[in-house]
Length: 66
Image (cartoon, rainbow, N blue to C red; front, top):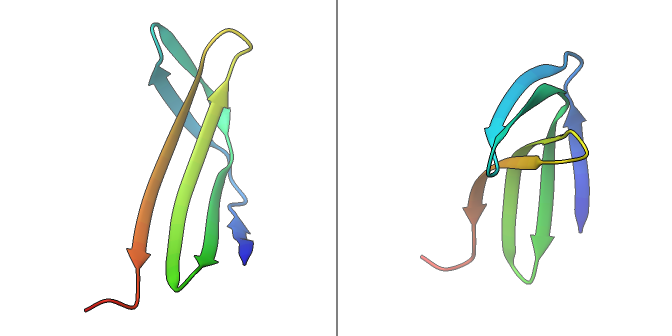
């Protein structure tokens, strides 16, 4: 199961470095993914200026193992 829980109402300024500067305003999404007993929630931001792009993904994972 995959689900976007929230897309924040305010855009964020994001800067990245993918073999050169890339920056701009972007949305932040909070997503949930459950697959084969492993749950993952992640905050994701993506920036693209048609030449360079960068992705920030922060994840929290929980599985059925101790």
